[in-house]
Amino acid sequence: MTKLIPHPLLSLTLLLVWLLLTRFSLGQLVLGSAVALVAGGAMSTLEPEKTRLRRPLLLPGYVLRILRDVLVSNYDVARQIVTNAPRRPGFVEIPMELQDRNALALLAIIFTAMPGTAWIEYDRARSVLTLHAFDLDGQQDWPGFIKQRYEKPLLEILG
Amino acid sequence: MSHLDAIPLWAAILIALLLVAGSSLVLIGSIGLVRLGSFYERIHAPTLGTSWGAGGVVLASMLTFSILGGRPVLHELIIALFITITMPVTLMLLGRAALYRDRAEKATDEPPKRV
Image 1 (cartoon, rainbow over the protein chains, first blue to last red):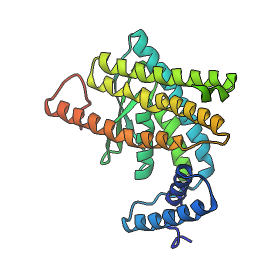
Image 2 (cartoon, rainbow over the protein chains, first blue to last red; image 1 turned 135 degrees about the horizontal axis):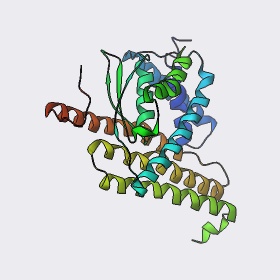
Image 3 (tube, rainbow over the protein chains, first blue to last red; image 1 turned 60 degrees about the horizontal axis):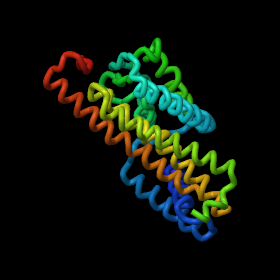
Image 4 (cartoon, chains in turn cyan, brown; image 1 turned 45 degrees about the vertical axis):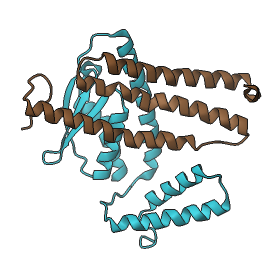
């Protein structure tokens, strides 16, 4: 199984994108599956770091929470830009437990998509993440908040 | 505009709300990009447009063409997906370039020092 489909998640995603781009039909399903499998095989010659999802069922809930949080953050930042309310921008340093490269890349996407936070730097030697917060007063305890709300669920999903 | 008459009123209202909300976020993000004080603050503003700004427009488009076509039209989701996964590359590059510059110039007020 792992020989035939070395990157099941990547292949599945590619197949889904293929089916979204074309109109769904049996022929496109076969063609898309072939492309997804070949691309998955090609990917393994690059020898990327592999990430195993131990509890993939937790992922949809996590994604929904992110979408909601990004929406709330959109509203907050939009309001602060429009009202020009006093706020305190600044940097936050967060010691991270998460080591997996792919999971860190996912976190980078999340924090960049979230208007209230910006991913500035991750220092691999110290495992410290530097974020820039649009308003430091928006949270009492930034490192605790980020770790509890975004890092811990990811660690659980990866197991 | 005639073919748009096929859209029922409730859907038209929902679509209009999504479009206005999405484009307002893009507009506010652009205003923020002009008005905000420091470079690091300005990084936050355009993400309004690339997250739910684009999201609102994408949802509105999906709803419109699903109703007009009589079948679910979902390929707009790919636009949202690609915006989401490519935008961090630009912003991180800009952020790190600014950080590098500020460290090199030893700007005192902005970035945390490397230990």
